Image 1: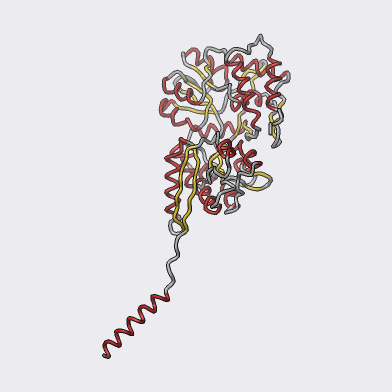
Image 2: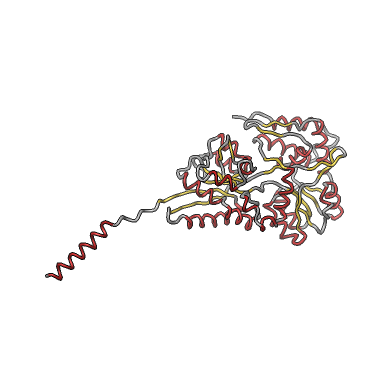
Length: 405
């Protein structure tokens, strides 16, 4: 009986202790959707898996990845903000409209550290992500600009200093130089290089491109477009031309650096944009300096975890990984200063061009008129003998028009 009684006391003690132990806290279940470029799907999935692993003791995650171009993210988000992704990548020129529409969640977690990591409040990447003194997006890349790619077996360093030199060498080689002039992003290079202005106050654009200097700029563009060494190609055409050998030099961005390097090998080179002849003088071509950003939907049901995920996608390690996998230039200062990144010809060329670049800040009315104007030149509807002033007036009227709605 004593043994039985003792055993009962032991059992009672065990059960009593068990009853006193706190229950293991159940993990929060978190569902998020992410939109990113089609080209980044594999890379982004890798980052998602590492995020889930890093925070596996804090939550159970269901993260769905969708393919939406950074170039059209704004349009997709503003179609239905509530139905849009919790976290999405977008080009910095879209931040104004996203902000005005109330689509962006202010960055409220680790804000000071994020600003410092990307160069401080005065850095271009932070300025591009800031509205009214507050951070509304996470800098992801500092390479959304363009420069000159070229094949060193065709061109010397001296050849690529001027547009005239490039066109002459392309013609003698039987190949082509390309720069897409029916795209306002690239067309800007000529007008801005000549000192003409394009500004945006958050509502409307302002431009003085339709003056006497603008006429001279247009004449220079027409001469380039009619040169035997030139061909107008879009992004896909640029890549195809490199692959089939018809393109030996072109203006493009880091997203196609791998294609150029794979084709040209040891002859792969990149540098700043050339000068062009304007009314008998050499003028340095300008460019847009752009950034890609990661935004958090202001209507997300999981703002804390959405901000955590956006910060993860854009941290130092993942910016380096993005460079390694896609050749994209970091905005993070430590990542940008790594030996590996500095050794990249494309990133080096972008840095050279940075001295002649301005942050891309334009309203939506800019793009269609400049495309139409460029098409008129490409299709030889506007020639040196045509009424250039009228064409410029029409383009500028479209650029500065008050947005509808």
